[in-house]
Image 1: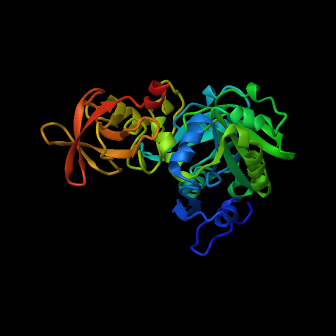
Image 2: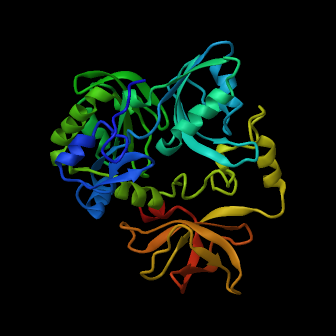
Image 3: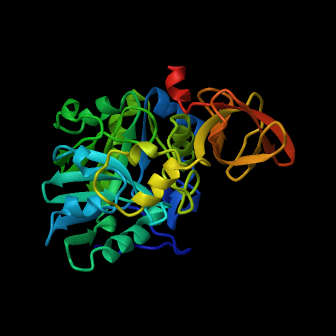
Length: 378
């Protein structure tokens, strides 16, 4: 794996780092990586993704290659993840899953890409990559598989929005329409550079693609996308818009909506831990016991009629003043114009119920909702 460069504050640099500095962006610490909150204005970047097309640097995400050695890589992986590898039915398929501890607590949520019958690439969150790579090695003591951390060899550009396909089609001959949702094509040529992996995935709720690019070519491809996308309304985007977009789309964020103290059921990703999975995996018994128990929590959406924004960690109470949960994410929706977010509460509380959030000493009423705000707005 290529050695990563660090800035003066010890933050890891993505291939875009110097470009950000040239543009005058303020750099922040995001899981040990130096990334900007915004490149222009968060609202403008958000709107571009909803109505045109936006570009994000997601190079902080990990890329960990796993190959078969003494046993099939997928059989080995099935013992570490909550989802079922047998649902990833063909080479070129991607699958979302979680990796859990024995007690069911989530170590990370991630996507992995099936390259061939003996090899896949996992993409842990940037802040969790070292932990997940170590977890993989700890459960590979007999050398069942070959694990290679290639994170610093790759850059990742996400192209998101209604005009994403038209923009990307201008710089590649790849037939993008052949790429189904949660699938990808390997080793494509983009803007004249080869070895680009093109996946139809994203974290915004919009149509789009993610481009895994050899790190040395990422900036050139980024600039080409900006150049070709001027008439399509392209915007360079950063972390702030990424967060408002994913919240509107009902997508969780590790470290906010769940962590090692929360299992997939309480964390709102029960679909990634299917009951029907036959194979044993780490945390399976604990997750099944939680599912069967009487006292459970669930991740619910909420909205507020007013201007007060609930933030991560704020207490949630019922109408009688009893603490029943906690806010895990919150923002004011740029698309819908009102505050919304996620909370983790006792499963007794359903969509349509009214609860109270303690927002800096003020008791503000919120309504529990489904996390389908974006779909409902279209």
